[in-house]
Length: 421
Image (cartoon, rainbow, N blue to C red; front, side):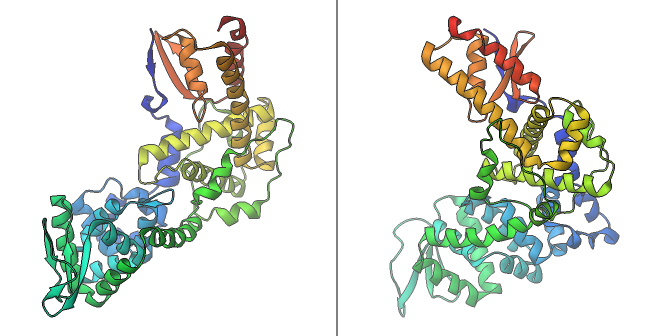
């Protein structure tokens, strides 16, 4: 039986690294922090560039960064880091806002203000039990077990989480919040007690949704149409440049031209007009982010972002190769005339057609021989997003479909299966 190697275990392709480092993380934040002459540049960075640039910073470096980050940038970092689809991670919020405990007062106040009140309310509602004072020395309830804290103003009794690390951190954070913004904290406690978690999270999500769209990241419920099926006879929509600009506002630049065997890169290299190349790069950023949102993948995971870049690039290339029939000159002209999103959708649609055929054969004829290449091939093809399987040196590798040739190879594998399965 051949060993199977999943696509997620394959080395990251150079193109994915290039796009990630040039489009998502073009700035070395650590290098900017090293000199007083360059630290002032940090507050001028676009939020996505700053966000992806801080992923490798340690705690001490992160604390050194915070004085140079604006309130708006910190809000954007929270927007990109905390959410998976429409679900907010209070654990991740706590991990970021814990720096308030050690930060200088002006910096700590900035971090408090930058977070939507709903984020604090969700944290308190999920992690604490808060009892207001009802009499001079009496609260709504008395703690039976576990860690508890009486607030500095003695107006609330707070039951802390059973997790000792969370309990320690929340105790320190609440005390620090009371030192800096006592009236605001009391309002947050009262509000969290009167609102449901669902209501709070929905309001927070709507605030976040509008902001991330301005950064070029679409909402999940809008992004899911990236997987729209395009019948092969349906013409692709023609490109309108102003629509691209409306949804992609991040300044995107590559330090070097795309290089690689994919038709997409070769066709891109034929376009020499800098305005056209810039628009295409913005389109690529938009499509990658749309796939990221549709797959409910968090931008906070760099490896998942790189995998998504690979999925988007290979999907676009597949659709472009299919639409141009492999003709380089036509492919270059197609890039000018049609949206990269449409090529991704066209490529995905051809995979859906292939997948339907494979599922029909399997349902009609039963399971293939266990451990066989055929079993692995059908397993990859029938995944939510179909994968190509190859056998090399006794091992079965899975990867994203990339070209018309991949489609033809898969069809050739399916053609003789009806009498074989």
